[in-house]
Amino acid sequence: MWFGIVSLFPEMFEAVTGYGITGRAVRSGLLEVECWNPRDFTLDRHRTVDDRPYGGGPGMLMKVQPLRDAIQAAKLKAPGQARVIYLSPQGRRLDQAGVSELATADSLILVAGRYEGIDERLLDTDIDEEWSLGDFVLSGGELPAMVMVDAVSRMLPGVLGHEDSAAEDSFAAGLLDCPHYTRPETLDEKQVPAVLLGGNHADIKRWRLKQQLGRTWQRRPDLLEKIELSPEQQALLSEYIREAE
Ligand SMILES: Nc1nonc1C(=O)NCC1CCCCC1
Image 1 (cartoon, rainbow, N blue to C red):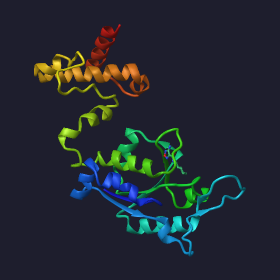
Image 2 (spheres, rainbow, N blue to C red):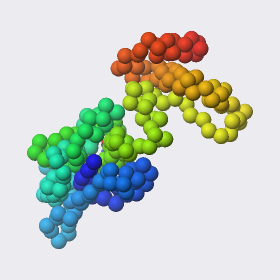
Image 3 (spheres, rainbow, N blue to C red):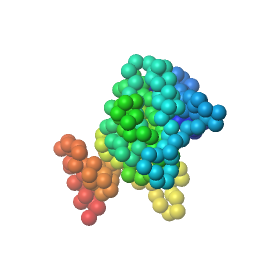
Image 4 (spheres, helix red, strand yellow):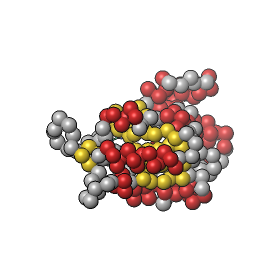
């Protein structure tokens, strides 16, 4: 999958292209990330990328012409039909369902805002969709863009080896993840649950699903509202709730 990034700080994206699962995906060619910096599209001596807001007030906006030209350059390079996305708190809240949807695109162009943002008219003419990571304000759209690259890349065939996909399975099922344990068996007098030491894979699978259901019920009942539990899952959850009382 191809990502076009429009950002004043393209070097930040080394965090996803150079490390871990996404870094491996780039090296293997499963993931491509190409950056365009509006500063490279400036026409003035000072390479100005910000501009004053009409109506006054504090802060600046991203200057329209360099930003527009950078987005246009990315669109020309994008394979297939690119969805152009602007990251901001005003956007659609990203969740795993949204990640799955975005992973079906031929290519995504992610526009990372800086200063106080971009001219509203660009959201109608150059941007297709606005997405948000959550109700908080960051200094720029680069970190949200990197989160989107990471989350979407994990959905691409071949990116996750089977060893990475545990968390995938639970959240894909709409549940929180189960607890995980590794050596030592006793840590500060706390034991690893015996079922995990017993080697009975059916029991371990059952215990993990029960923990996913129970933790989701305890911490995020809103997620449970969204899913239809099978009779087996309902029985497991009831067992968890009985044991929790
Ligand atoms: N929250 C968020 N989710 O996605 N983006 C977010 C954000 O806080 N972005 C900050 C940007 C927004 C444009 C102007 C410069 C600051």
